[in-house]
Image (cartoon, rainbow, N blue to C red; front, side):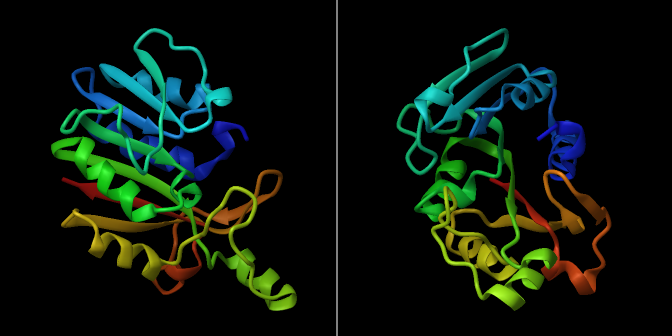
Length: 202
């Protein structure tokens, strides 16, 4: 998928640029997409990319270093190390999402910020399809689950974070080949947004 056509990534990058600078260290979880990691690295001092699958790890370059690791247990990452954590469409792949969120808390410095995107379990197109096909069953392919607003809120309440926000991202059809959506999500329709952007602060 091209970055310019992926609105959830565009919004994530926009929010990232608001808080990033050349003095801050960034950790990206799920970093097999080299072009996206480069986008992040342009605006920080150092970027550490964590990728679960060894065969998907790109070669380190410039201010980007890669490590194989598991978000649920980042044994090779020290506590209180990063000002920013970024993760795009990775949380839904983890078996223990609460552990992943708590590891985010651990590796962030005090006042550090995490930006996490994930698909909405009840996005409008999925609700329409399931009306005819029945509820989608998980795990499905690499997704262990997907999330509603309430699902995410329950996890965050259980987590170590006290400061968090769940933002609905786009509404309509936002597929790889077909995109017909509104960037602005009316409050009354937030539960049917395409994606969620989770902002957490330590």
